[in-house]
Image (cartoon, rainbow, N blue to C red):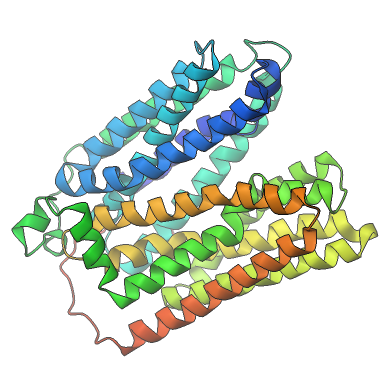
Length: 421
């Protein structure tokens, strides 16, 4: 039941975020007349807030109750979204977006810790993470779809329903997590650090980075995390649509169709893929993800050479990317947590989230510079190289983990979230 509530909380939160994400740039730049600079700064500040909040949220999840951290962070996100309703100046809007980013991202490491604490067993955890990712994709898609009927970018108040829905979604998400945490069991023995300083969450950030960097498997996992983020997620919202419009010359509706196909493929295949890959190691699946994303960028290169098929190939590419996502989402966080230093699961997850967020924030800038210079082939070629580097890093990670002795069986909490196989 607790896992189901966590999944529902994730879906509801993303439903609210989905109402805002597709329209925030046009609202700030055109509807309010603040210009493209202010709109871009709002997106950047959202990413900066996320980058700063992830390590802090992770450390707090180690030091305090992860339920309290997740609930508090979601209420901060709700406050940030609500503040956008009354933001009457660029400065107020920028501040609201910053707070919004802080709240959304600070909750993520704590929610991951809760899954790891409440769900025992690798297969069950993969299944829960898969359902959580599917719920997020569905919530985002539904939110964006509904917002299309209630948002009016011709009026300054036209985004108020979206901002209000986003705030309400995060409040409801916080309440669901609070409900899930009632009567929760104490952490399993395996979650308790042998070092009292680590167990209390008092390890300095520099020492935490040193401990993480000292682990070769975590170093390769960090490289996989960064390169896979750059290989797709960093370009999902801006670079890929810009490439479609400027290089492939497809219609705007094709971009919306591609995003919809991406969500549909995830929802349709997520649990099927989890069943088919249940006995595969996480590094092996990450190798497959990197190979799929490399192939996706090659498809985009072919689209530029076949104008008549460009739209179809672009939509197909988003579907192929989604197949990789169904493997990526269920394994990366559990893998990172399993490699984390004792008593530093939340801290490690927070640092890795910050890495992913920080490098993802660079994606739109790279796309703007390269595509603005008319170098579409360079844009695609760069991402083929990045995806190839992810493939190499995942292969190295598999070799490093294969050379390590098998860990002793850990004591875990009972599986309270048995979901249908």
